[in-house]
Image (cartoon, rainbow, N blue to C red; front, side, top):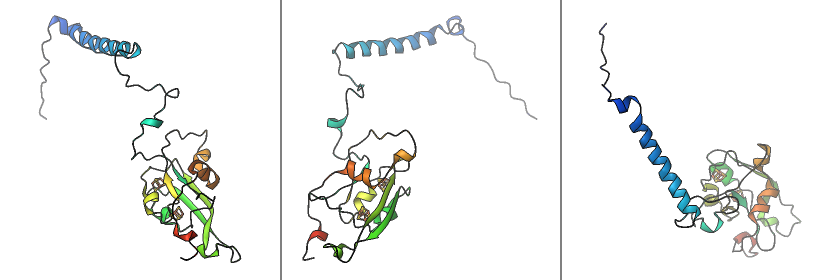
Length: 181
Ligand code: SF4
Ligand code: SF4
């Protein structure tokens, strides 16, 4: 078996005492301390946001993708027709829908279905936005939310009630409410 002898480099006295390494580390620490001092005294723009006193809300870009939520129209009607396309397309299978039939005596019986249950598991959601893209009724949108918290996994499964609470109202034409279509 071949033996390889590894030559140890000869260290100068200041390297043996780690003086140069210590000086490099100290330089970085002092640099950060100076930067923080300038930020605190207002002489330099802050890069650290002091959450929750300060929030990102006004600074979020247009394309920001946050928590998905269901929306109603301006008359409080559910836009979702329970077609389950979003459930089908969702890559991590975070959406679970149980559809229900709209009774034939309902004025909007032609819409046929609405969700009986609609859950989105936020521990699975990857905020990809595919549910929003695929929805034919503009019933699900990714909101500009980033503070999604809960004390248990169960709390992070947003049910239909919660999804409508965070989604709110969206105004705009949806053909299913058009009596002539
Ligand atoms: S954003 Fe993506 S991962 Fe989250 S629920 Fe919609 S399709 Fe699923
Ligand atoms: S949210 Fe949209 S895609 Fe999902 S079931 Fe409802 S109508 Fe279909």
